[in-house]
Image (tube, rainbow, N blue to C red; front, side):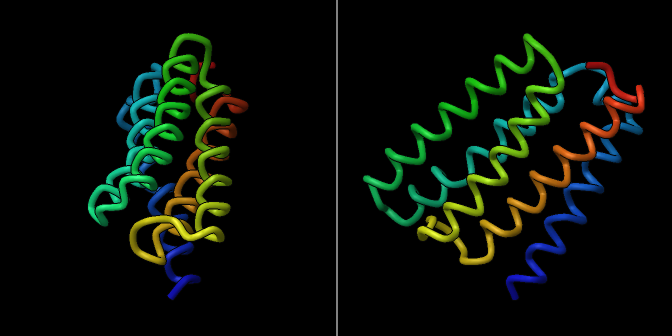
Length: 132
């Protein structure tokens, strides 16, 4: 089940990023900034759904950090946004080991999505297909 979650997440990260690039949504930084904010919002939502107020507060603070990173990345450059996605993927792995709120498969799905999307964006920057 966990391997499947990771594979589906990786495929979704690749597919979403590729479609965004082909549609021109990566011609500016806002698409990646919104993606980073969106992926960071899931754990607070899962904690709220479970009714765990302490977990909700903790994940809301973590979300605020990634949202701030997304806003700074929007202002400063695509490298920071791609790095933010990869950092969120690493956070997902750690959160999954510590017992994150939500479905057990979610941390690996989201980590795979984030890391593949972030690495692909870095490759697109290096190839000149996406502005810095």
